[in-house]
Length: 313
Figure (cartoon, rainbow, N blue to C red):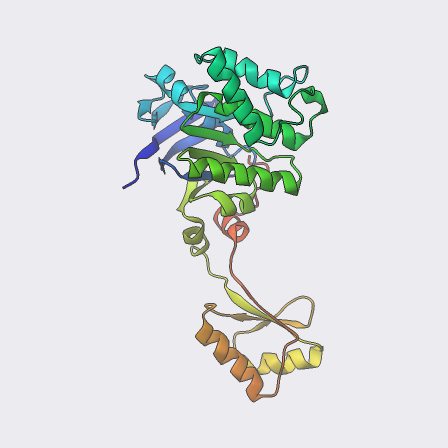
């Protein structure tokens, strides 16, 4: 049975008359990746700030690593690491000097600190760039260095607030690999992101936050099952063939391109076989065949009425 790393109950936060967190509840299992999804302004960063003791909640309770964030802030800080939306690195220093600065601020000995710096530079593939000023680093390298700095104190719970924003696809995938490796080592990761594919790839459980309220929680697969929409797409060579197929297959609809037919389906082999046999019976053949299931974009749109790119009001 998994131990709970983060427990949140009825968390509330307002700025003036604007309610940013409206009584949210969730638990995060130890050694898992928990993804908090939402558009800009939904309350993701506020949630992170409260859980990392950078901000005080107006109501509710939260425990991180077994410690109350309000009453035991120092204990919470010793158990966590935080990587914010923007890399908190000193551009005038080298990569090694940035890491050494974090070591100097920690209670480890200088000998152990040197080993930690070398190990982190190697782990994040920054050895060759270690003695270069951070001002010369790419965005991906800065994010890797920022995360490496977070790991100096060997935290067991890490908060990653939109860690791949602004990165190119290759750098994003590198960060994904690093995050998976951390969890494989027993670390708990609390991830906020606007990228639904990122949450789908990484998170064991996901909570959808919209205008300060959690509108859904579950595994990626569970969330996708919340909405209907699995269908087979059949692309035909001509409009005439499509018209014939549309008459044969009930409940089908024609796509805007005029040559693709959508057929509702559960995606199972029996229903697919039955569909293909029906086409064959009438000597019809599709040029392309695919099964599409709802993704997290569909789920988010169905739950909130907009995409993650919309600025929440």
